[in-house]
Image (cartoon, rainbow, N blue to C red; front, side, top):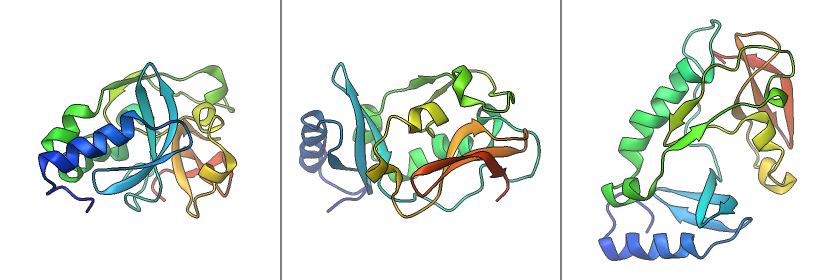
Amino acid sequence: PSGINRTPGEEAAELTAISGAQAGDVVAFGRYTWYVTDKTDGVCTLLCQGPVAEMPYNEDKTDVTWENCTLRRWLNEDFYNSKFSEGEKAAIITSHNTFIEDDSRYEMDCGNDTDDKVYLFTYSESKTVSDDIRECGVNWWLRSPGHEQEDAVYILGKSANLMGNDVDN
């Protein structure tokens, strides 16, 4: 019965299941199922088990960073507001997202730090996820830049394509 029109009791049961989950578990949250990729100080990091949308990293092929791409805006506005109930939104914390040197193999601009409710992993964050989780059957974007500033890194199979792909793909 996963969906936005659940009862408060169903939402509470969902949040209780998540709070008891460990890294590697699969949990239901909102309209999707998620891998628990990390649990630190009682806070779970979730990675959607399948695609939430087939969207480009950015609507236009241009030099862009995660901070300014259209996918970030869509995830934190349209997706966040339409796929989660008010009770679920209250449980989603804002993450302060940064980059490390390893996230830009070709010394492209990673952009400024961001504060997001929903976000993509960086290249370095994706390496902490098991091969079984990475290889989910679809390619998925990372927020790290590729070989050019108009490219973004993505996961292909269980490996990151560090050259990236055109952001408007």
